Amino acid sequence: MDFGAMMFSTDYSIRPDDLAKMLEDRGFESMWVPEHTHIPADRTSPWPGGPDLPKDYWHTYDPFVALTAAAGVTTNLKLGTGICLMI
Image (cartoon, rainbow, N blue to C red; front, side, top):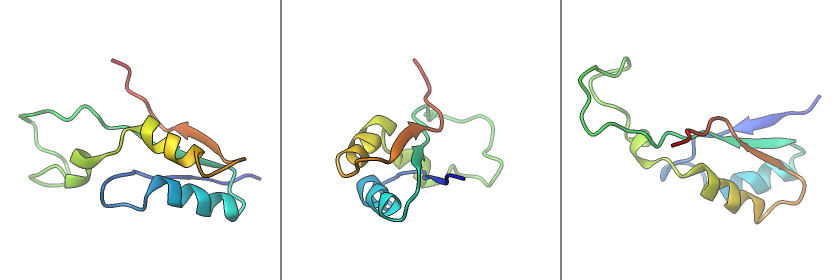
C-alpha cells in the first residue's frame, strides 16, 4: 500500500518544498495540493464555520507554483492537484 499526503499550502503552513523533501525521505508515494483561487470579494451567504472566511483561504499558494517547488527538491515523489479550477 502506498501513502500520500495532502496539504492546504498557505503563507502560514510548512513550505511545499520542505514538506515534499520530508515526505520523500520518509517513503511517501505522493503529495497533493488543492486550489482555492476563487474567493468572492463580497459574500451574501455566510461561511458555515462562522461569520468570516478563514484567512488561510485568502493566502493559498497557486498549486502549480507549490508543486514546482516540490518537484525541484524531489526525484521520485508523485505530485498532483487535489482539485484545479479551470477558468
